Length: 357
Image (tube, rainbow, N blue to C red; front, top):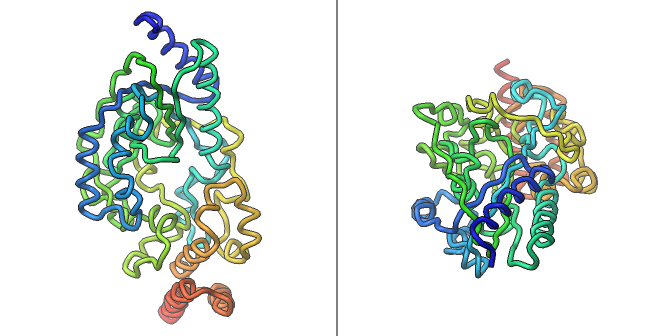
């Protein structure tokens, strides 16, 4: 059994080792998520989770860490910046309807494996220091209330857009956790500094932030383009603009992101020129090309059909162009039922625009 002084020294070493492994900040929290659980249950009751039925299915596992991993006493939370060193200006991409916008977190390699491996290395360092102990690493890979834990661990506060904001680093970072049975000293929780600002609420293209700190996933472009498997609601398609994978608008306008840090991680560098890709070029990718070019990328889990569906909507939102119309018509020859419906909508939009221009 470690003494309180030894546990404090270990906590300091854990934070030092985390920095060596490439994490920008580390904090430690307990497992009490009672307040977060009440908010989650209310959010679920209102149906804001959409088709993400697993959030209901996991029950209290998400908000009671000791049920997910028996014996858990503390959670070590870490964050890692992800903005790539070289990438086209996101606002310029959003302003050009011939380009496709991919959320900045997905421009490089999949962060899940990168962070999980480093959390495992952190656990190994702890084990080398004190001997065997109980732990389990998570990176968005299990029912974990990672944002609530990050706030308790002092990594930042939950903004009105529901992302974690750090006063010295903005919000462009990933989160990861190491559940442990070590009674480590707790970090001070972060305080909320959103104040009266509601820039994120005002900018949301589909009005998905229905109240401060409350996002209706069914209207969120990130959910619609990535998680949602069916047809995108017609009334939301125009508002999607050229966003084909995720949406960063709420982060782009957040004043705290003037403090955001560029990531030096090579794995988060832009791949396949996805920081400012031509929509028509992406639309030409067959399934084999899609799988090859998204290997090791977060985009792959979306699948080829959703990829084409999202691009079809973006092309429907683009200015009238006979080249776009021809590309949409050609795709109809081999399209699935889901894609056919979106192609029809996009063609209608293109033809209407061509008659009014």
